[in-house]
Length: 336
Image (cartoon, rainbow, N blue to C red):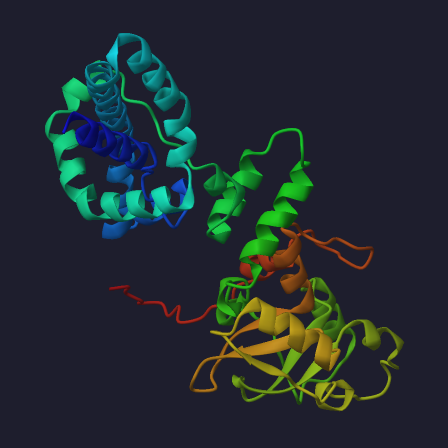
């Protein structure tokens, strides 16, 4: 009878030693990020992390008590000398036996069945497990993977001495580039400079166009919701000012439109496909809400402004905002 109990204790010792907490499916950073956004499952997973150390201590206590019981039964069955030798063999081999496939399978099922109750036990007596030195459980595999772009961006920002500031900026903006919408970087409707199709391109008009700081100006037929072409300012330098040439005759008649809710990745692909440098941004009603340039998209990808020898201003968007038109600004206006 004592021998049967000894064998049962040894089997349970092997199984208990093979118990491992169920690893979370996501990394700690990603679970923390989702928990901050109100994800209940992520919050529960983080709470479990705080209790896993107590479970580890509980496992060690159970293993210690079982070894003590095995020692008593071994001496009772085999005598003092042989009992101590049997105990020594068990202490040496129970760990490797607990890592075998059959032991891990049984231990995994056993733990999954009683995990909730064990966690409640640890949570009910936190002081006791803190006093007996609850350990921590780390998942090495979780440190070698990324579960979101935000996590990778966080690690890039925290890197020190590995990437330069420009490299960090490039990586961060590249990772978020595909999620940005055209509306996030476009020049808004109220800041767009336009020229009417009937406008004569005389010296005064050309001077006004150059002072805007833009290389391209939309040509409109009546209002900004009817863009019929694009006037390239650089191409006007060779015009004969003695001739009466209208904006409609000098403009590029091809006009490309893009929706404000489309991504920058889509916009970049469209720029490369059309070999054009300016898109008119419209809403679902085909109303003009802004304009987008190839330079704007590339700057969003790189995370910094592109200044070349043709730029007269460091920030063309800032220039456009300074040149706001007097939209809806009557004398007796009232904002509500």
